[in-house]
Every structure is written in C-alpha cells, then in structure tokens.
Image 1 (cartoon, rainbow, N blue to C red):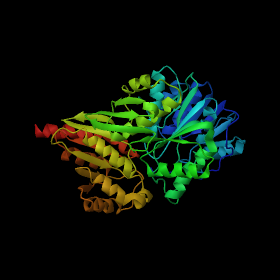
Image 2 (cartoon, rainbow, N blue to C red):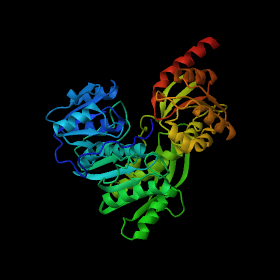
Image 3 (cartoon, helix red, strand yellow):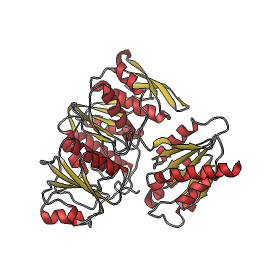
Image 4 (cartoon, one colour):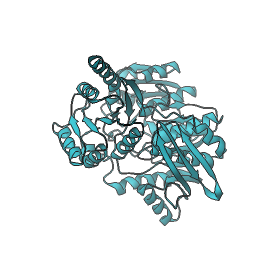
Length: 480
C-alpha cells in the first residue's frame, strides 16, 4: 500500500453545503468508512461501493448505509448531493465519471470530515506516527468521562467499523491524514501533532516540504485562540514550533515529551508485560501518573499528548488518567492476533522505520526469558523501499529473525533480496520468502515456545495471522 498520489481534482473545497445524500467510492477503507458511519449516524442518507465484501461493510449496513460490491456507473444515485472519494481512487473510476455526467459534485473525504467537524469544538490529531492511537485515546477517554464525543479514527477501536461515531456531545475528535496534503484546510480548535518524520515521498519532495505542509495546515486551520500541542522529542515538531515562533503570528505551541524544556514532561517511562506507565508533570506543579494496558514507550508519549489535550479541553485531569487505565489500544497497533504452542502472534501496522523500531521494542518487552522476536515484514512498495530501505534495515535488525515477504501488488524482483542484504549488513538476520503463505509457514517453523511473531506492514499482511496460527498448530503436532 503505497501512498496514493492525487489524480482527481475535487469540485469543492472548504465545507460542503449539503450532506443529505452522500455516495462514497471505496466506502470500506479505514478512513472512509469512519466518515461514512458518522454521516449515517447523524441521519444522512449514505450509500457506497467497494471492491470486495468485508466486516466493515456489514457494520455500515447495520447503521443504514446502502453498500454494493464493485464499482459501476449505476451505483451512483441520481439524487446524490455529493460523491466522495479518496486519492486511492483513480480518475478513470466509472463512478467518478458518472457523477460528472450527472453534474454531482465530486469531493474528497476530507471535505466531508471538515464539514462535520465545523459544527463542533474540534480536536485534530495528526502526525507521521501515532495519530490513530492518540485520537482513539482521546475518543475513548472522553466517552468514559460522559462527554459522548463524535470521532473519526482511521482504525478500528474494537470490532470492525468501530472507528467512527456521531455523539451527542460538543466535542469532535478526528484523525487527520497528511499523506496527500488534504490536512491543509482542516478547521481545528485544538491540534495535536504527535511527531513529524519525513514520509510520503510520493507527495513531498523532501523533509522541509513535509514540515511546510504541517505549517500550512496549522496556519490555515487553527481557530483564533486555538491550542497547538507538539511532541517535544520530535525534531520535526521542534522545527514547526520554531517556524511559527519566527513569524510571530502563529499559535503558541505547548510542548509535551521527555525533553527537559517540555511544558509537560514525561518521566519514569517503563513498559513490561503488556503494561506501560510514566509520570506526566505539567505547569504549576500539576502531576499525573499514566498507566496503560498496552505495550510501548511510544504509546505513553501518545497518551501524554492526549492527556494534555484533555486538560486543554477543560476535563478533570485526575478523572481522565483514571479512565486511561482501561484503554486497550486500537486494532493493528501491536494487537494480539492469537497464541498457539506457546508462541504469541501480534499484528502491527508499522510501515515506516520509526514505527518498526517502536513496535519491535514493545514486542521485546513482552518476552519471557529466552524468548525471541520474529518479524514478518511486508514492505508497502518500491518507492518507499528506495527512500527508506537502509533505515528499515537498521530497524528490522533489532528482531532476532526477519522474514521478508511481498504483497499482492508485487515488488521488483530484487527488492526483498536487497533489503535482506541490508538487514544482514546492519547486524540482523533476514530471510526472503516472497509468497505470503509460505512466509507464514516459515515463521511458524522457526518459532519456539516463548517467542513472539510480529506481522508488520500496512498491506494484506493483516490476513496472515490465521495462517501463522494454523502452521504453529501443525508444527506442535509434529513435535508431539
């Protein structure tokens, strides 16, 4: 899953005047279905199409959305007030062409989201990594505090289709995607930037241009007297803060992290056995203990940013951190895929070197004595490997064994071989097994009781969990 490159020019920007009858192309996508769900729950008429059936589509149907499989011109309702797309959809899509013929506005998903957010006090969560988890922490905690927020998260909080909700409260929490520059123009009362590390090489020429995108987003979208929360440990966030300060007309940034000069400082961070804890100290002696039921110091950083946002929103800090204790994470963020024969299998969405590094460190914290981490890594695409291959290799070398596999899209013939060599040169151990099913068996046969297998990537590697568990069972039977 490489970053989508924009090929469709939308017919409108800013806000959408009429949400009454919306048709979504690719309605089953993680971000698309969450927006569609909010619209359906608010009483708007929602229809959509997708390439194949899924549990998410079934979830949408249960809230009244009319969903069909396959993209065809006749799917577009003649009375639609807008046809909604993401840049994963090409300009040759038959439903886009039909909307143009019918004179129906073709608009990007971000426009619908921005229109929904404009009716509430909005909290935008963005950044290279951690935005799904941070947005989910905010939505979860606000719900447990009785605020009943609306939210749009680009991942499932619980079961399929649970990333969106139209609440009755005043607050709207949204994960905002920067990959295709559609974050620019988002209206926000509170903005959380989890971190900024160069990404999406298809749409940004270099790190400076990537940071400039966030700067433009903040300048264009932050409301008067809005609050910007930045990661004090992220060089990109610090550069953004410096740019805003130099201009003299940007919002004041609140810095959160482990750095000594952070406004809210995170200390004593530890993660072990599936639990994480730290102390968060703020201005005027404010102090809170963060305790999470998820692994990873990076998740404590996400929780710290969310906690500060809750404080800015006027929520009781003690009550907020108490509710944080019940947060179980979001799907595909190092979440359990099963356990067989003493081997745990975890599902990770990591598709950037920093994410791989963080999730492998978190996986290591789950090991019993003598246990090993086996990473089954599926690169997102050739351009991403060209840009970050060396960094991926260093990150993957932290595992005891890396199994490199391909996706249904297909990588260049030598891509996995090159990455395998890079991992070995970085001090790791790697084996290339292009076929995903064969990679599942290889990882299972290499594993022993006490090990953790991490399935890593943003593509169809997520479907590999059952195959790994079946292979582990077969290995256990043979061993017996």
